[in-house]
Image 1 (cartoon, rainbow, N blue to C red):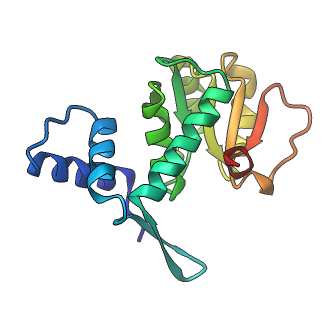
Image 2: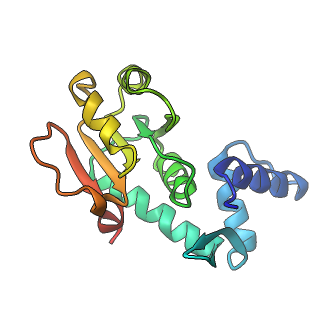
Amino acid sequence: GTMSARGICKAARSRALNGGMDVTTIRQAFVKTYQQHADQAALCWKDDGVWVELSWRGLMGRVRQVGEIINRLKVKPGQRIAIHLDNCRQWPEIYLGIVSAGCTAVPVDAKLRPQEVSHVLRDSEAEVVFASARTYPILREVEPHTPNLDTAVLVEGEKVLPIQNGRMRYLDYEDTLT
């Protein structure tokens, strides 16, 4: 199966600690691992039955693109950005992009009920959420109760975009990367 973000971070931290490096954050562990293992596999997943591999260099490129999205959305370092996604290949790059931009990632379990999602999003004061076509209906339901939230970037957004009559702005993740 897919390697989870926790597994990636654990592996990066383990590599960093075993290498005797002084690493204190996930971001630092990621950068060190990228520097030492740029051309090695960082992520592997199945796409239509075929294994696909992304190197640490490729992952770093995608992490930088997420940082550019955050910059274009005018999110300032220190602000919170929510991630409302199932476990997917985009999760680690989005998480790493958020923390690399100096923001705080707020993971929101994709299995939570709408009222719980609403509470976490409201309480976090996140203005941006990375979500998906699958979690989109929940976002639409909680939209009236999350006044701070103004933008959702949707993985596989082409399945539900364009959105009509929404208070929030909905963007497609892949389109936003390019």
